[in-house]
Length: 535
Image (cartoon, rainbow, N blue to C red; front, top):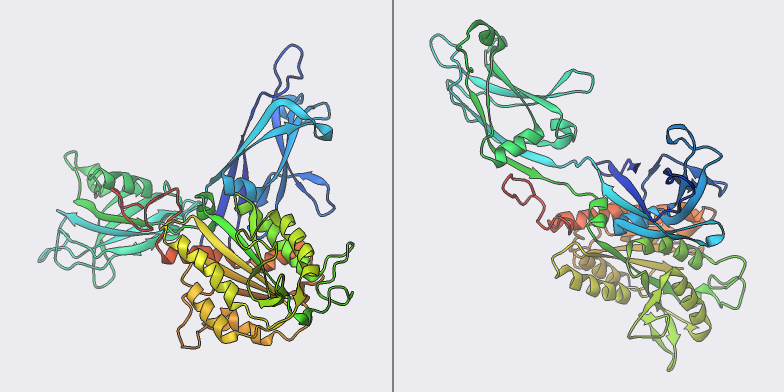
C-alpha cells in the first residue's frame, strides 16, 4: 500500500514523495482466519491530537511527525470501523523516512509494549515530475514536393496533447528553403513545455511546406511520445513515417510523404533538493554560540545567557528549533558545538573557536539535547569576554567542507548556525571567509539574538546584492541567511525553523548543480549522456 506526499516546492519542479508500506509478523486477532490488515496515517493537529490524513506536504524546514497505526479491519471492503482490532503503531518523522529512504521499526501496542515480532517498513520514493530540459535535432528525407517550379520549403511543428484533448504548439523549426531532405537546427525544450513532465503524454509532429502568404501546404504528420523518442533513439531507430491521411485513404500503395528522423537527443536532468537527500547526501550541522560579555552575566535574569528552567532563553530556542530539523538528515545525529568570544580554562585566554564540551579532539555532541547540555555546562566554566570574531569558526567549518569537496560526490553538505548578540567585529575577515566558503558545500545561518542594531549584518546576507570580499572578489553564490530573532520572538518553533532554514534547499541544489554533481544514487554528472543521451 502507498500514501502520497506532495509539496509545491519553491523551485522549478514540484517535489512529491510516495510512501510504500509493508508489515511482517503481524498479530493474528482472528481465531479462524488471518487478519485483514490496513494502515492509517496520522499527523498531529494544531491541538496536539493525532488526526488521520491522506496527503501531507513535504517540508524540509519542519519536523513533520507521523504515526502509522495498523488495524485488523472488520468493516466492509476493508473500510475502517469501531470494531477494528489494533495491531500496533509506530512514530517517526517524514524527514527520517526521506533521509534513510527505508525505515523499519517494531510495532508497539498501547503503553509501549512490543506487538510480538511485528514490524512495519516504510519506503520513500521520489516521484517528482522532473523539470529538466532536452536538446533535440530533427531532419527529414524524401518529403513530398508541393511546389510546381521548385522544391518544398519544409518546416516542422511539434504539438503536445493537453488533458482536455486540445493540442498545444511547443516548438516550430526554421524554414529550410528548396529542400526535400531538410536538416533543421537543434533546439532545447524544458520537459514541462514538451510533455508537461509526463513522458507518455502524446506528441504530434507536423511537417509543412512554407508559403509566404501564410497558406502553408500540409506535407504529413507523425505521432509519438517522449518515452518512445528516448527508447527509439537508444536503439538507433528514431524515425517516423510522415503520413498525409488524405493520400493514405485514396491510394492503397501509399506508404508515406517522407520520413522524419530524430538525429540527436540529450536529456539534462535538473535535480531537486529531495533528489540529493534521497540519494544519500547527509546534512552536517555545526553550532557556534556567542560568549561575549555583551550578553550579560548569566547569573543575572536579564542576561541573554540566563538559564531559566521554565523558559528557555533565545539561544536555546533558536538552537533547538533548527537542530531538531537538521538532525533528521544526519545519520549519526551528532552536532559540532563551538563557542567564541570567551576566556576559557585552564589559562583563561580568549578563544574564538573552542569546543563547548571542552574536548578539542571531538567537539561533537550526541543529538540536539547533547548540545543543550554542553551549552548549559559550559556557561559557569567560561568568562564572557570579546570581541565578536566569527571568521575563525567559518574558516574551520570551511576546511571540513573543502575536504568533502575533494570526494567529488554529493555526500555531505555543511550548515553552520551562528548565534550572536551583536554585529561581528572582524567584518573584513568574515566577508573574506564567506566568499571563500561560497565555493564549498556549505551554508551559513546567522541568528541575531537580543535587541542590538543588526543593520550592518544585513550586508552579509546577499539578498540585496552580491557580497564581495575586501579585495573585491564576489561570492560565487549566496550562502548566508541572517535572521533577527526578535522578529520571531513570539513565533512557534516550527515558524522559527521555517524562516531560518528556508534558503537551505535552494543553496544545496545550487552548489551541486554548479559542480555538475548528481545525487549519489545516479553516479554520473548532470547532463552526461549515456547511450540514449540521458544522464
